[in-house]
Length: 368
Image 1 (cartoon, rainbow, N blue to C red):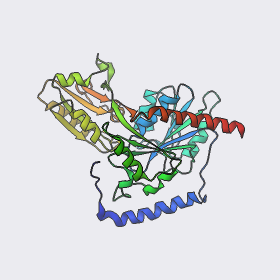
Image 2 (spheres, rainbow, N blue to C red):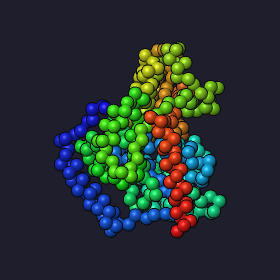
Image 3 (cartoon, helix red, strand yellow):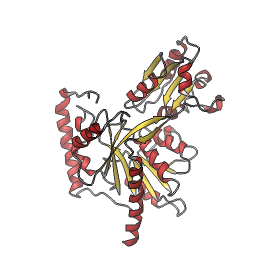
Image 4 (cartoon, rainbow, N blue to C red):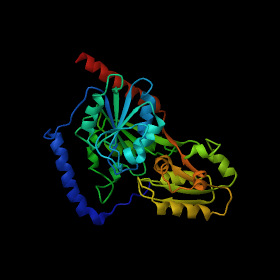
């Protein structure tokens, strides 16, 4: 495990923050504030911490699992979008109108419904009011563990292996949005971004520290990095680039990230070059003209003729509409897609639990 940075000098503020969070949760627990249930499966994918657990890749995993059998809608808050209220993604959508993560999913899965609204309850009612041939059969709620006005039919909670919630503290001392004991609201917990070298003792240690309830299932996942893809494919002839080939040809890399926790991406990319330069920006960063000029200057300063710019998929969608990027940079700009893989032969069991939940929900509705 990595050492977790805790700002103990901020503990008085965490104490006050905790009072407010606990009071709010008690209002929901005692049903003073109502949580609404819906007539179709609503699967929540969330976390206890402020970002960095891999919600979007896990949501995409569920999309791939379910989209060929069911009509899927993904509902997100649309963090940092420049619009308000309920919006359905369409051909005019961009990272600015619906947020970077929803736009990423819309581009990858154009056959599903993608919607954004800070008020998830209102948005679900909008989705259920769509015509019969467009109405979703399953809704995936992105980053909604704290959005208790919606009571999901299944709650999946993510935690980063290098910063598990049981070793963290409340904001601003740590990164927890609420006390970690509230993980009891989750049906399934996934420990994400795990190293592939985990052994049975590591699995058992995490499980014991989490203090799981009998009904809770625990899974362990990691990321699989795929071939590099051009951010602007219309400008290049090669649509996939092997990072192994770049290593053999001694490429220099300029890595640009605007992620909550870029450590894993940095570590992965560093395995393929002896010359890695980085430009690290805050999570969901909107690239300004000054940022773009800095990227241009840093890239041009690399003397190696074999050089490339690499970014994350989430950052790529925020760079797509940036008019300050010259063609020279566009041709050298690639992103590194990732997919979720489950460790310790857990994938079959995970799929079974998701598919069983959907089928049992439908069967219970029919019986009711």
